[in-house]
Image (cartoon, rainbow, N blue to C red; front, side, top):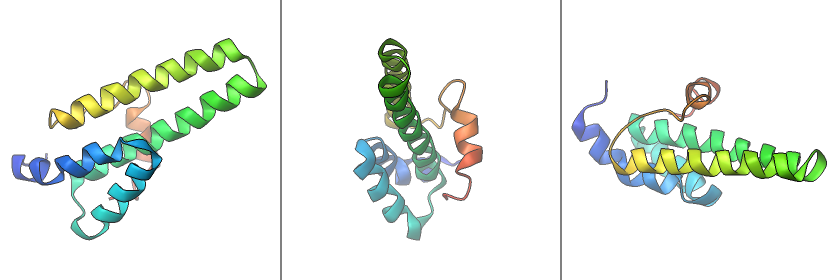
Length: 109
């Protein structure tokens, strides 16, 4: 369990992680030294969202534009979920895939 102090120290970088791909890179670099678990949690969530976005773009381009749009909307709503919980100092995984993102990117700490 994360302490309130750990969450508050990592909150800004957790939010930055959700601000585009560049924000995720900045958060990763900034968190290399401090290794804040709250920031790392949200970085892993955002990396998963980036994969979801790439997947939705590929589906839209090569499979079906309507299906790709549906995946994009799901990704966008998931992004809103993630940034909302970062702002509210909560480490809640994105529904359905959030736990998988934590597992897949466990080396990001």
